[in-house]
Length: 211
Image (cartoon, rainbow, N blue to C red; front, side, top):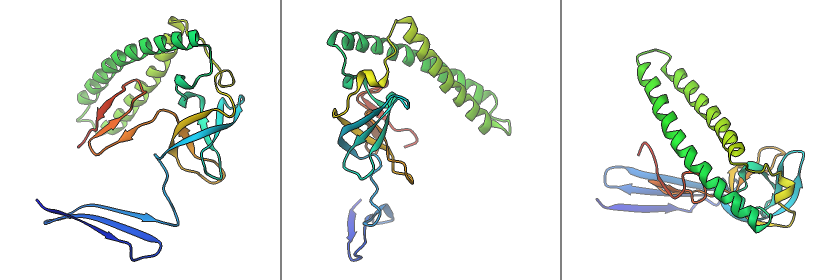
């Protein structure tokens, strides 16, 4: 089936793009020059300051407002710690990832069985939300237990990240009022059918659901 791409740049403040087949419009995109969307964009930023009280850092990545980077959104590759400690940390994290993968599979199967058992109930949607919330809480608690089991030191942000350090970040949430953008160092590249998440627990390529 033939497809044609149409670009309308006649309006000074807006550009429209349409992908059209013989039967229907396949995709439609537009860009407003007065409001540039930079969510999911990837930038090379510099740590401007570290806030121990917030356990977060502020990052200068070219915007007027510096972005907010929480400690949990910093991958260990950026930790400024001795090489021996970093190697130990990576080994422990790999073990935690493997244990979390196995635990997630068990919890997902249990959660699905509970939902299927109650699928005729009028409150199935609420049950599903409750089940997902319980799984998330259990996952968080299980990760903490694993850290204690493997003797992983609990670092604080001021111990591992320093002002002036250059890092690669991705925008999670755009600026909101007086708040800067929320950032992460766990980069994900989304395609039409797959998502590349190179440094997460699930790692590599992940196939999108509900295609």
